[in-house]
Image (cartoon, rainbow, N blue to C red; front, side, top):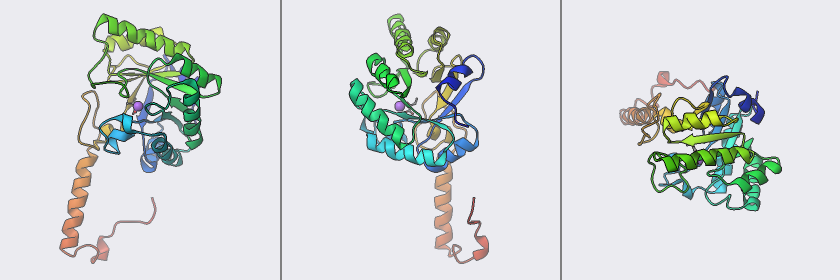
Length: 261
Ligand code: KIV
Ligand code: NA
């Protein structure tokens, strides 16, 4: 059953919300099978799947492609699509961009920063919006924690409040002090989803590649529940060894593929 904005708001204070990113069909299928209520097709796709140095290289076309793949893998899960860099610069541009992501299969969109007018315009046009404050990678110059000074912390609190007041139904808090995330979570009526923001948020999101151990860099606040990159090297080595020794595909008894899942 697909959850929607009101369901997530109702979870606040009751049951922590788990969110994972996904970019491909088979990964989305696994996440839906596990019962995770919300998938984020993040613009992190540019860094963890496409090899770009920044999320700023991601386009609407990239997002449509990945949202479509994730939707085919997870037909019954709420999907949030990230609006890429510079596709939400003004209300009209943002609405046209958001409509493309919704048409590609997203239930809602996420955008970075306290863009009050943009959020309000999207919500007024029937688009469910997720906000994102704290570290906002599209405009950040480093990936360091933000909100360490009182002034910065106050700015982030105000941004979170403005995002809620503009009509967003959920907000991602990225890489801020745990106490600040707790304070924002208390102050808002909508759920906060933390990444590197501590245990006092209403939910947690991880980039699926980080959780899988698929990649070559792990943010300090992430956790590797598996080591898929190591598995890839092992599979490629084992295959190479078997081809070179004529073990594969000669010895049919070795085939383990069943032809179905
Ligand atoms: O793009 C993304 O995956 C994100 C999360 C890190 C919150 O925005
Ligand atoms: Na993002």
